[in-house]
Image (cartoon, each protein chain N blue to C red):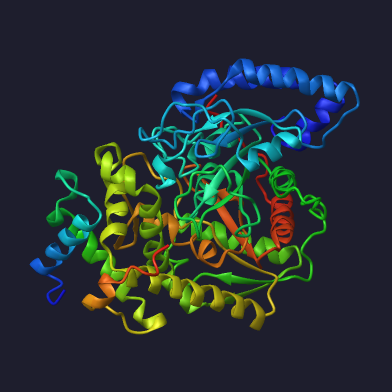
Length: 67
Length: 450
């Protein structure tokens, strides 16, 4: 996600939706992107508590520690 | 006669029977159904049959304790044999559960009667619980997600309601409806048979008319022989409390703020040493809470999201979808933040030699239905963030937190005071809340919507 405010975010969302088989009009990346950005911004605020965020593609793809 | 203590005494003095209590509940629930919507399902014949058995047992000298013959409401995310578990959602089938959740079977073992299923916010994921009304003002929300239990208890339909609490869902409706609500220590009360929202944050616990009601319920729910009502009258003289007023416990609505400070003064008058403290790490509560819930909720609801997305409320669908698309690092970092927050709370309690933390339960009273934001001076805040920011710290830490009524705002809407003790010190939280309740200037005030 080299451009978190641009189409790269929507492309990333589309890829992730496809990974999970989430297709159709309920899952429009353009409509999901604003909430996604808000959540990443909130995540970024944690830098002050736990250190700098990892937002590179490698960490995006890493789902190993999901519950 | 609203509390367990009063009802239990009346049952044993033969002033009332369990059957009569059940009949009264059925009449009142029917009378208020179209205004309160606090129950989604009531099986009258099952309740009356069980009440008759309960009376027979008591007459035979088989007294199961304070909850014997007491009707209890169960949030509709908790399995009750013979009832469908609907979670406020069309996703769930109408097939009845074939066995009770552990908490329900424990309540039955303690003699309680299941009055019915109380309304839950959809998937236990929200703070409004439409279409339930607040008994103090029917045009206002009861809070959520255990809004049905909060409204039912406040209205006097049942003295105890079971709820669940992932970010405040017991304490929010309890505070907004003028009831007592306890989020127990994480993992103290079993969640088997309870639909999850976020498995590392979910808690099950009681809402009650009084602190003692919650204590009786806790004795049944924990079921290890502990008597959570023991010591409720021991007072708080000599205890030391940390008072939390900094972010996220501010800003507050002015009436909430003045009532909260009056509440702290009341605690001081009872002999407690109340010192203001700050725990800066807690300002990150919402980032941690909202970094954990989407991914854990998505894990559970993935199939429903894929197959029936339009049967999920758009806001909840957005949250679940976030769980699918967010980087895994968001979850890991939120978990790390949670550990840091919990550690900071523990350190603060140790360094300041505190028995408990005291905070406003919520920054605002019950919102009018349809309102999506709270206004604090020049700042507006989404209603969910506003209600959750003062309760969620103790979901992250897992320590017990109880809300007890602490007065009313200028419109007659209830305000709550929150007490959080160390993990496994649930009985102490009840004891502190009981002392406050006993000294409160307006104990026993009830809504007059009847």
